[in-house]
Image 1 (cartoon, rainbow, N blue to C red):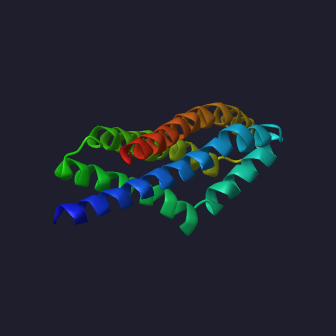
Image 2: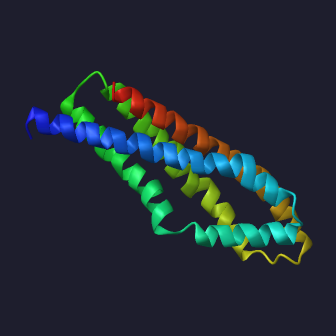
Length: 162
């Protein structure tokens, strides 16, 4: 691949990484500051029902393209940057690690298992009420992590464009 083609690919991937991680970070931010507090104001049964529905609806092409696509773009851009070797490589590598680890991995390791436990719970039990109280705190805490990681990745991808 010649230098002009590599530069063009790098630019395209960096733009996609910046936009994708920004969109995902904004989505997670909305959950941290609006959705989860609103669900916490509902009864445990209502909050659990609403979150269960959200967990089904979120698996859609728009969100999955942004979420998974940005992870793929991050990895591809890291590879292109390492091969290309430029001043932007450090920004790209940091952004890619932040997004892949802080957003994608945190989601899979911490948020999804909590979603699965919520799905399995019987909302009519005292156990489910305890689960919901813990879920609101722990799920949101991990959501703050992926929000910050995604937004920081967006900033670093933008710095790589300079």
